Amino acid sequence: MTPVETPEEQRAGKPAAVARGYWRWHREDFFPEPSFASWGAYRSALAATPARFRDRFTGRSTDADELGALRRRSENEMRRCLTWWDLTWFGFGSVIGAGIFVLTGQEAHDNAGPAIVLSYVASGLSAMLSVFCYTELAVEIPVAGGSFAYLRVELGDVAAFIAAANLILESIIGKAAVARSWTSYLASLINKPASALRIQTSLAEGYNELDPIAVVVIAVTATLAMVSAKGTSRVNWIASVVHVFVIAFVIVAGFLHAKTSNLTPFMPYGVPGVFRAAAIVYFAYGGFDNIATMAEETKNPSRDIPLGLLGSMSMITAIYCVMALVLSMMQPYTAIDRSAAYSVAFRNVGMRWAQYVVALGALKGMTTVLLVGALGKARYTTHIARSHIIPPVFALVHPRTGTPVHATMLISVAGACIGLFSSLDVLASLLSVSTLFIFMMMATALLVRRYYVRGVTSRKHAMRLVALLAVVIGSSAGIAAYWGAAPERWVGYAVLVPAWAAGTLGIQLLVPAARSPKVWGVPLVPWLPSLSIATNLFLMGSLGAQAFVRFGVCTAIMLLYYVFVGLHATYDIAHGACGDVDDEVSDAEDQKAAATVAATTDVERTGPKI
Image (cartoon, rainbow, N blue to C red; front, side, top):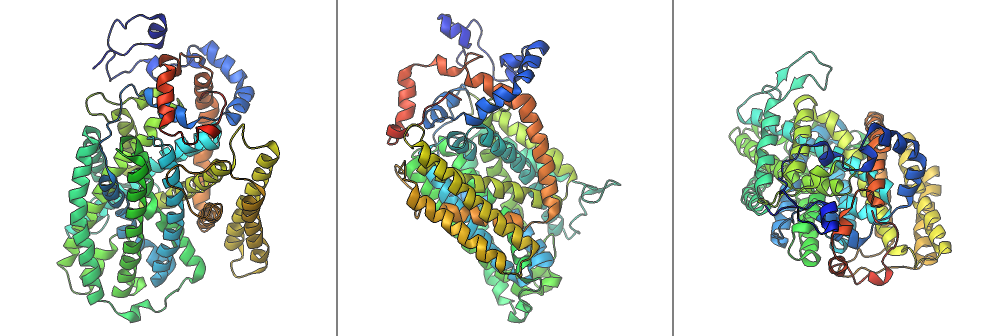
């Protein structure tokens, strides 16, 4: 490995005496900021918390900083080795897994009945709106941080932290949920009950079935992801081709045993049940954001990301709807098994051998979800660590593999610990709240990117944008809350829906656009991003109160971490208090980084470095 100089040695023009290895465990590797140098320094930092919070609340990053300064904090580059073909199959592999094979049965049985197909249509439309927003931002800012990086640029440090905390929560819980589903389908494959391979304990319900197999599966897939991104792509492609044949078999064989009478009653739990199920099965679409995190390793982001994201998600949405319809027509919704729906459905129609094909395909699908998730979520974590919100040791890229080994280990170990204890229904609702919340923030960030640029947009227009965004978000939240409280009444909708439309139209007519996309842009702005805000909030409102209680508790813990740790680390970095890497490179290198995103340099934001 090439010797790595400390910032002090580089500024002094001295060579590093000793090369630093990748495996570092000293205090300064985790907390290098001056605020944590001693207890006295930490007490002083805590005393300045209000002022520091105000500073970080208004702080913004820039496209060039995300592409240049932050990436250099990983010390080694990720390898640009992926194409649109890799991304398309990554999308396929990262999405089709636990969602369609497990949540479909759970939600059809409990909430939607045969109308589960409508739940997939509703969540699929919302997901596609989010895909549009992700695609534009990933093309403009092709870095590993995904939504975290985009929010740092558009909404600031505090909003980015909220996203970062939820992204890490989503990464850990998603990994745990899929791994536990893997165990259920393995049990089905060997003709055992879904919980037969778990260890029963006397802990509280929902946490009383220990799952060591889930821990092993997470460990194996994480190891593969740490070895090579391109190698992981090859494994995913081969496995996904096999999965295509399994899906084709499920659809064809399922329709051969389908009965239209099983679709009656079509909506046994009413329209509210359809949307409750849609909010949960949204988890099945959540893996697409992994593709955006691989932009840093993509050879041609402006071409490959739109093809990979939009292509894979269009196919997946159609597949989900057809597979949900097949399951609903094979047996009455009351007979659908909650844990291994498709395997049991084929067994119930006399195709006992087919359950093994389905279970094997489901296991393969969940394995690729874990594999691609280990790849994508580690990239999120890497970029979050580059900002010092979490210890910067997790930002390091291994010099030999070109992968973020530390970040992969962090997410995998935490996911394994959660997966060992928690059941899928406990995990899925919390995961859906987190995912929907982030996607809502992404749509807001896209509107801000299009209509506000510091130094270009006037104060009058900026305040107008803030007010109109508040109307859009407030009316969308009001629609969701009204639906949850009184879905059969129409008076509230007669006020809130026109308010949402008025807020969106106001943005279009009263706030001049400050920026145009360079290569690929979301069509019908501001209407599609505004609709994405509304649909994501509406689906959030369809979840039960318990999911929001869990989400609120987790968010409160995250904010405590930010106040006591993350705020002070990012403040020190923003103000160059610990020899930030921005000082270690020439202006020419920064200009080169900016050039990759500059067709918008004429309106680039200014402000403190982040």
